[in-house]
Length: 106
Length: 118
Image (cartoon, rainbow over all chains, first blue to last red; front, side):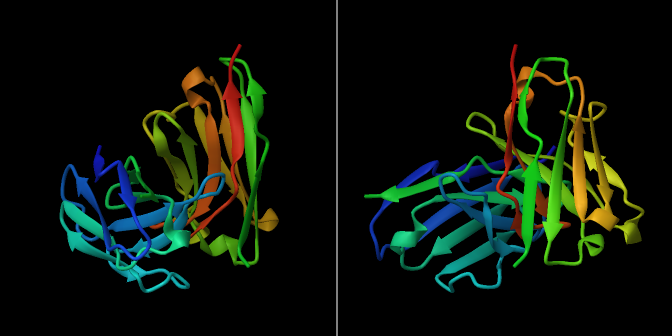
């Protein structure tokens, strides 16, 4: 099974900060990686697919990069609506999710 | 707007069975793969399994943790997907989501809570 490891598990930041979340795969997954945002009491929402493709309607301050085993999600200027938990997911071999990164207010 | 609505969750004893349903609307259901994903505070998000579309013979695939106990089916005439859960274990306690997609999951329901406890 492919394991996905996210870091950090918690991140404290302020509005306007540039935020980067890392996701590492236990083996190469090519570019088959997605990122989701989840707010309390809500389902996950797809932000990015195929490593760097922005889902329709998602603000351009979100971006993704990487390949193989190391990937990043970047929020260029954190907005109040962005305080949430973020998950990566590989879909190279079935599906596995990372453990999540909670972005909280500093 | 794409909508997925799960139902059927509840309290069940260990060893029992439960059937979840997910009703879809506002998209061509028969074209899409449909998945079940569960979430717990301790184990996070876990893919349970999926059913492919008609073009891919409605093939089903499962996570190792549920294979042999859970069965996914779909009825394209009703725009619905189902999760039959048998031989339930306490560790199957979770919020269960249905989600659309063959790779990334671009639509999710609101979830239905399953509690396995005596």
